[in-house]
Amino acid sequence: MGNEPRHVAVIGGGITGLSAAYYLKKAMAEKGEAVKVTLIEKSGSFGGRIHTLKKDGFVIEKGPDSFLARKPAMIELTKELGLEDQLTGTNPNAKKTYILHGNRLHRMPPGLVLGIPTEIGPFMKTGLLSFAGKARAALDLLLPKRQSTDDESLGAFLERRLGKEVLTQIAEPLLAGIYAGDTYALSVKATFPQFHALEQKHRSLILGMTRNRKQGGEESKTLPEVAKNTVFLTFKEGLQTIVNGLVDALDDVHFMKDTEVSAIHKLKSKDDSGRSYELVYGGGLTERIDGAIIALPAYAIAPLLNEVPAAKELMTIDYASVANVILAFNANDMVRELDGSGLLAPRSENRFITACTWTSSKWLHTAPKGKVLLRCYVGRSGDERWLKMSEAEMIQAVRRDLQELLGITAEPLFTEITKMPRSMPQYPVEHLKLVQRVRSGLAEQMPGIHVTGAAFHGVGLPDCIRQGKETALALVSQLTV
Ligand code: FAD
Image 1 (cartoon, rainbow, N blue to C red):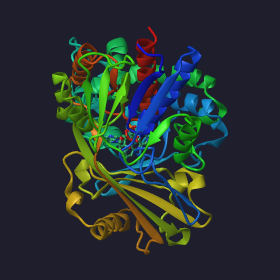
Image 2: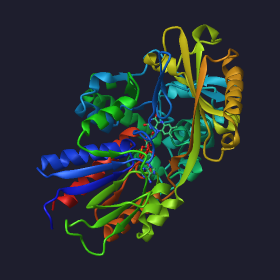
Image 3: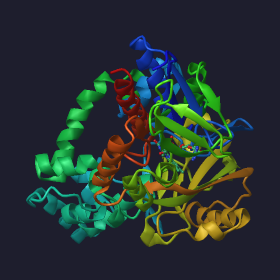
Image 4: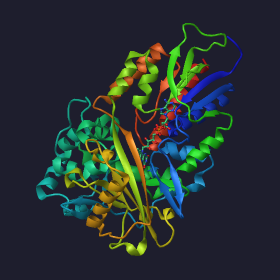
């Protein structure tokens, strides 16, 4: 074996790939080991889904717009990069969220945690549910826990515990908003493992969530000040801040943009430098590597790993297509006060938009004084009408909803559309077993080649960072035995 440093390819320059490269370099340095890292990205920029646009004094997120404060991976990385002072929470005066029901906006009852009621008073008063719907939800307090610990769909789980009304009117628009999915097609264990764990531990979801909420209050005392009174955080200059921070910190990584990886092959025997794999670029060039972290959507990973039969299963993970339409207005064109963070439109309301964030009310740094920024979400699994529409048609359809729901008739100052086909992985029931099979197949046939990111254990930005880190540490322990 030669004395050259180990060579690792990180494939995919989204938040997962960048975080993996960062933690890989860090862990190798801590072990006093040299490593050469090449980070390969198909598009012309880094950050993957993250894309902040600054325009006319607005801070506009064309992809994700924030992250959950209670999941530590993002805050930890932010601190490591020295960017903590850039964090900002939501406007404390915009805590209300509205849900559309029967064409009217109803305030979401306070005390709901991920759609689960933890305060009985406001829940019993909400106009979102019938009396029978509320009584059915209360049955959760009495129902026994399910004996089988097998996976089931998120929809089946919530319907079983809280009834169909809570599922369709409250939980589905809230939770499926995160996955843009059909709750009956999503795995409860892979999307919201805490629900399954709550039932196993506390039997009742309502009781368990109420206890957890009290405990969470205690745990939040350890969070940094900025994260204490907010569910979500972002950066004052947009999420691009963390991407730029990572790229700057990776100054000795070899970055390759506009470059696609098309395959990874196992060499029959190690080459003179002891390298075991050959990486094939889209143009046909090849490079020898010791290991790789592949942080791509599932459907982009499978074709790279033709030699691993289990990897074909990744093609069975569906992806929903979504778009967001951002509209800027003069504040005095607003008809109703935007006194909250926005509205959710359940499937049953048959709207073009699935939600509208009142961005400039929720995040005070996003619009100049006297201006309003709205962000409308379009598309969910099973509703891909918009894919065939032109941008002008989409804007028209969004504006029709805004007129009917919020009374806005004014011409927007400008609009920005981001279309993201096949962007939201839909973890199927038994997803975790599928992931296990793929990883075992890889470990057996291509040790040192790892797959990670939003396709596997959580789509949120902190989940992606956590997965990038865990994968990097697993590879480091293989490289340094
Ligand atoms: P990606 O960001 O998809 O990165 C993968 C990268 O790989 C891409 O840059 C791609 O160009 C590149 N690539 C693909 N094929 C190849 C190849 N063959 N060779 C080389 N490179 C390749 N999460 C939150 O926490 N908060 C939010 O507010 C939020 N909102 C969201 C809104 C939308 C519309 C979407 C789609 C997602 C949202 N998410 C949110 C989820 C989160 O943004 C994503 O899960 C996360 O950004 C995925 O990161 P990733 O690095 O795993 O993948």
